[in-house]
Amino acid sequence: MRPLFHPSIAEITVEGILHALSDPVRVAIYADIVSQECSQNCSTFLTVSDKTIPKSTLSQHFRELREAGLIRGERRGVEVHNTSRCTELEQRFPGLIRAIVNAHAIQSRDEAQGKKRAAQRTARRAPTNK
Image (cartoon, rainbow, N blue to C red; front, side):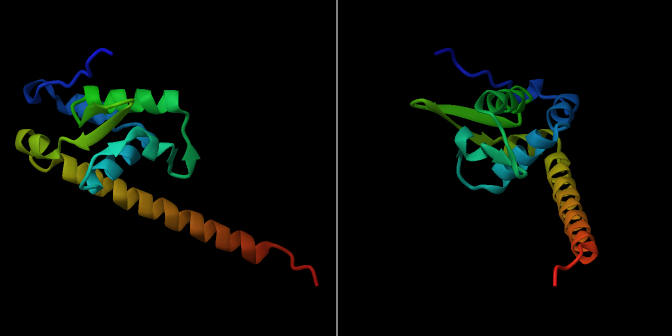
């Protein structure tokens, strides 16, 4: 098996980070990894934001995150365990990751509230069968 590529901290760019996190699935995966204290294997993310993600697609998302320098992957047998590089990134770009993860949390909360309100409106409009 070939080794996983991890850029050095000096090679990581803001543009690379923003590109990697521009995909809604990747930013959701990354926000979850950042919130965990232990490493996460790829199988943990077979469902992201109520969407089933094929393993092949998931592998590509993790490759993008890893090559952007956002995560570090470590092979353990057939699994790859992923951890955030937040400490290193905080030193290179102070506050950037925290701002992105906070913005994602706000957006996710707002989207969930919007879906809840839409479901309530639909339920009120639905005819009752009596």
